[in-house]
Amino acid sequence: MEDLQSLADRFSLKGEHALITGGGTGLGYAIAASMCAAGAVVTIVGRREAPLREACEQLGANAGFISADITQTETIPALVAEAKKARGPISILVNNAGIHLKKPALETSDQEFQSVLQTHVNAAFAMTRECARGMVERQKGSVLFMASMTSFIGMPSVVSYSAAKSAYLGLVRTLSNEWAASGLRVNGIAPGWIGSDMLEQALAKDPARRDRILQRIPTHTFGQPEDIGSAAVYLSSPAARYVNGVVLPVDGGALPAF
View 1 (cartoon, rainbow, N blue to C red):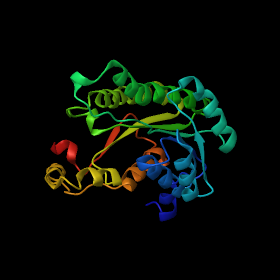
View 2: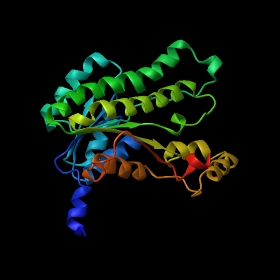
View 3: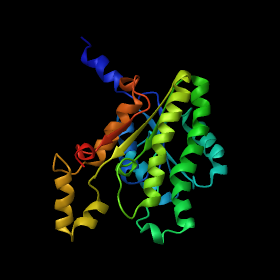
View 4: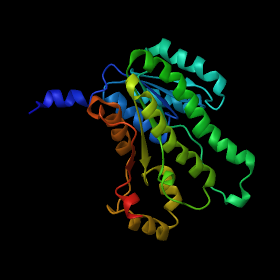
């Protein structure tokens, strides 16, 4: 039987450097906070400097930020080099940055569709490819893609978002297979309905919608951002050393009950 200390070590991220895109707010911030608490040093990336700076003040000395637009994929090698110079080799990558578009399919333009894919798919792949170079060299690393319930189920008026999040399933399956022998693990997380200021604002004036959503969740509760942070820590830790190529729903059981 393992003692408690060795068990704690299995869930520790001490000595790891995690780069988290979209890490200044929302789920990205929750992941950054959880990884810092688990012992990692963290670099958060986003387009707006003010929330990144504020997030790092809250996260403490083990966090830093880089203000960048990852959709400009030609700048990603320099971004990764800057992060490595500041805090050491990147051993964990969390592809969390994204944009949302709620619009009927017949009204979604080519430009709008491509914009969503550029952020979620093209930029995430370019970031993964660049970070994976060092991971392959060191024979160690963890990559996470933030998927969605729309990766698995059909929801109206989010065709571009659903297409982008569904693409993550293919990326996780292919890259986990291609890089496993090089010591890399590639997994994903599919959040369900997670409590946030944005969700509360959306549901505050629509109690009937709130009830409909909660009825679809077997636990009859919304998740919390730290639930996603905890899942990210687990999947990136030694405790998950034999977990590769999965997309983990964190949804209170909503997906199988949908």
